[in-house]
Length: 344
Ligand code: SAH
Figure (spheres, rainbow, N blue to C red):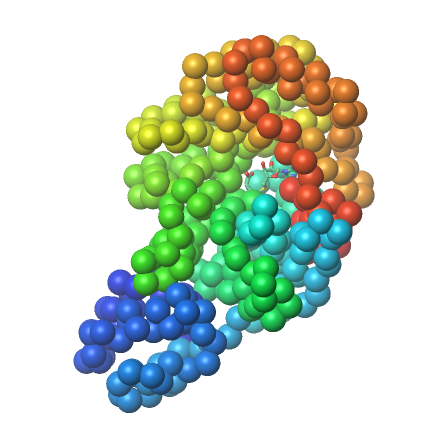
């Protein structure tokens, strides 16, 4: 059976070439062709015939299929992508100035069961393979090249789609290596952000193995009982331990840790909540993304009013912690945070 070419980091590919007595220059050439030049046809130019035959025999270049897509009025596009076993995940293109950020999924469903998240209600079906993570970007890039050839620049990657990326560490790490590789997509590490609910085992590996990639922590509440209710894994992996790891990373230059704070009306949006948040982050290199709750059918929370959101932010401002209310993009197509559910 053929294996997806997009499964392999460059060192892995080099090992395969070595083990099969193929010319050592092959892997970098293939990377250049398929990632840097983003070519989809076979690599035959300046590429040894013996390597061409090996590639044709052993690797597949299939990408996830676009099952359906929805375009928002603000250039956001939500894709439902079909994987080779028929399972579906969502990937979202988010406009950012003249370019795009892409929001990738890391799992089909999610095991974290956060009470405010549409994907969480779905439960975990399976992890995604590296080639399915990389494949989301390439499938969307191919669509952009065809549909918006003058507006096709994907500049940043966020793991904020379906799934808990640190719960599928190996595949996410290998995908990041492909994105970062100088022969691959050649992105800078600070252009990639992994968002986590605070999955401690993965966070420890992140610190040891890939601390240059940005982390965003879904904090959502300081108060233990409130965070337990919002993010059940808080009971197993207490936020104090999570914060200790996040804050122990040596901060290069101007690096800030991004904290996400979901704002749910009457639950974690009071003056006291804002004060507690301010106190916990004061003096740290912290940046808070305030995400007003995005409703979905059957949700048990509500989105606060504009005045309530502003009041929360003003209270936080007083503690000197920088924050931004994240304006929802694509909410006319249910593409905003936590609204992704491949079954709906
Ligand atoms: N599992 C990762 C990434 C997935 S979600 C994590 O927990 O961080 C990306 C962000 O969207 C997280 O901050 C998540 O808490 C937030 N989110 C999930 N559901 C939401 C909803 N209904 N409204 C607003 N934000 C939501």
